[in-house]
Structures are given as C-alpha cells and as structure tokens.
Length: 174
View 1 (cartoon, rainbow, N blue to C red):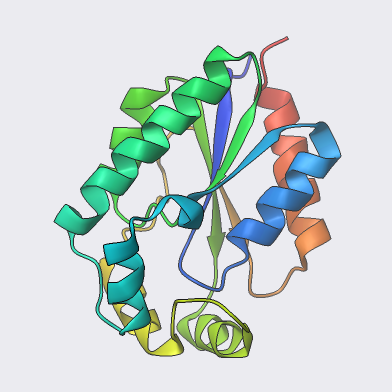
View 2 (view 1 turned 90 degrees about the vertical axis):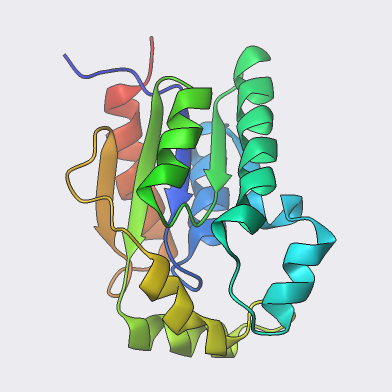
C-alpha cells in the first residue's frame, strides 16, 4: 500500500515547466491550481526582476503564505497542486510540516535547457541571468519521501503531467 498524498507541489528551477505541468495536471484530475509566483510580495518580484537572488529570509514569508494557502485548499476538501520552486530541503520540510501527506514532483533539467527556456519566456519577471543562482541554491530532492523525479529536459508538458497524474493516483486517498 502506498502512503496517501493529499496535496502536491510541482517543483524545480525556473524554466522547468512547473506552472504548465501543474495546470495540465489540474485539468486531468480536477485538482485546484496554486501558482506560487502569484504569492510573492512586491519586494521579492522587484529583486528578482533586477537579477538579485532571493535569500532564505526573502522566501520565509512567501513560504508561510504558500503553507496557509495549501492548508486552506485541503481544509475545503479539494486537492491542491502548487507550482513552487521549493529549491531547498528546508523549504520543502516547511511545506511538509504545514500539510501532512504532501507530495513533490521534481521537474529536473539541465542549466542550459533552463537558461534557454527562461530566455524565451515573454512577460516573466525572472531574467535568464538568475538561472545560475537557482542551480546554486538547488538541493535536489532525490531520495526524499513522496517525491517523483521526472526528466523535464526531454519530455513535453502533456507527458510530464500524465506521469505525475499516474503516480499521484496511486497515492491519493480513496
């Protein structure tokens, strides 16, 4: 028997496809999407737009807001899917503490693919110059509980969402 996953985080560096995979996954199974970037305070957006990496302190309030949002959606009887970088294990542990039964789908890709994708994104606050800082902060979740690792360099969004959906269905409460 698999442990139950009541909520899911689609995680990884900028450009890995978190938002697209999360939205597609929600369409596949009726889950509630939560776009992590929408909860950044204006100061965080200003810093990232200027090419200044966020610190743990910058992310702390944001992670608190995301924890509250996850709890709210779960309490309403819905299945949330959060698109969030969750780069460090301490960030993931904070989210896990807020929502027991939280699963993670890590969209892994290379720095060169991430840089190319971010450079091609129109209208996003994160410049491609920030990719190196994302990889420097990344503590990949290999071996962490309730975590699925997918190669986002080679697969397209529908394939990634389908793989995440299949994995999550095996872990969802009845």
